[in-house]
Length: 310
Image (cartoon, rainbow, N blue to C red; front, side, top):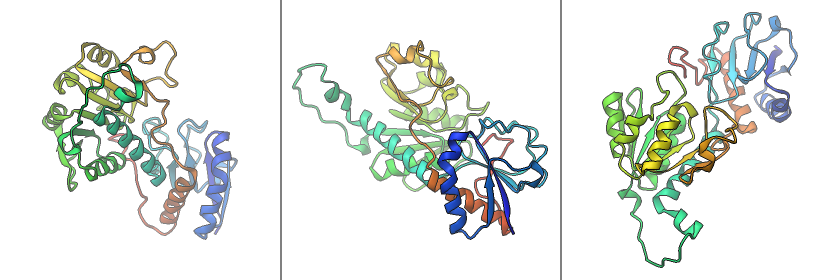
């Protein structure tokens, strides 16, 4: 049987993904017509990016699933024309990239590397940073990305705690849930990493009250979603010294506008949404794995619960 697989994303993505997807389909023994131009009534699967021109799924009466190219699904979960299963992207390459980025920035703050890298003084006073076991790190969000990052930090010896909507269990990681748990993890986190999804329930999780709850001089790292942070509250906390520094990779508006105060703030590091990117080869393998599952009657992996938004 020949499957019709529609690639519904921008043209530059097609250039990147066409060959890796064809290779993955061939390796899986799947015969398919992979194209950006297939009649809606003939489509079996949709490989999708939320910024695609395809926004009305009503004509795709034969399609069995929408397989998202992105980890984030907040731009599609509210689409009322989408009635078939939606799978988010959990890409091993993306996960490894996120783990490396988070680990690097945690280590930067833990060891105080800026003092030596910037060389802002000639002070020769020796200093001994604490060991990882003496540093309390918090992970808000214990999904696939947050869990893997937390596990790596635990291997390095950090006193790591994780918070999630529903309680998780991971060896070597203190796990919290619920509002009381959120307050507990905020109060203990000298370095806080944000890897929550973008939903109405998570917007402004880091607001004035949350920042005040954290230890004075704490650090914030956000590779998750821009709306998790109340920007004005964070700038105020940085100005007062309540928060020592923030590394931000995601923002409410991207690219970050040139006039935004984050650019010029001496206690903010801006990175241009580079913490993790889907890798075409490994992402294509994951997409084809889900197509295989759909064709053999197995449940799709990484299905989105649209009532929760992730």
